[in-house]
Amino acid sequence: MEREQFEEKYSNVKLYFKSYYKYSFTFVGNADDGTVITASFGGGANEIYKSSVKSDEPAEVGDLERNWSYVIAEKDGDEIFEWHDPRW
Image (tube, rainbow, N blue to C red):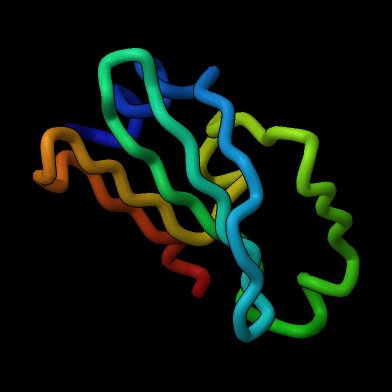
């Protein structure tokens, strides 16, 4: 699946804060079709300290390049999509 197809199909999926590790926030959500999406952003102290995360407020997948550093999607135990920002 290409990035544009993924964004078109899953951009409105809600992701919820799961963890913070080594300057990176990770979020996880479930699409209506059973796809589990894991996305993270950050990676460096300069970027992460400017971010505010609330555990009870979901984020949307949206535009990958604008919102995330890394995204992976799995359906029925199989990886169907993986993307990482080349700047990281």
